[in-house]
Image (cartoon, rainbow, N blue to C red):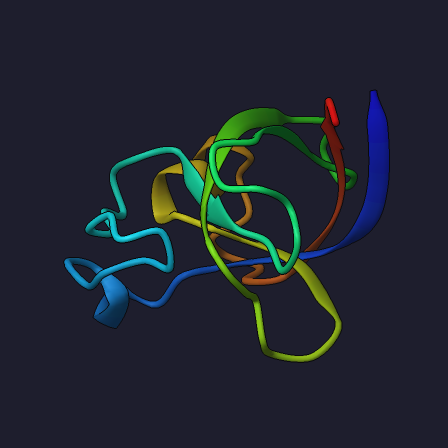
Length: 97
């Protein structure tokens, strides 16, 4: 398992229904995420370091491009790890290469 730590944010509602970098239509209701370099389809477990909650998402987009963020989550994924109120949280991501 490969692990990284960094900041996670989540998509603004304006992106719902738009195309992702892999050609899918983005949905806030799906457990998906954006990462700058991981291959599309990679399954990533995202753990909120503040509360220990985790969620598994599928990479289907590129980004985030704001600040030094590591991963951008759909709202469904952000809800699952209880980070919507904070907006940006420290996370650990884990995935198989």
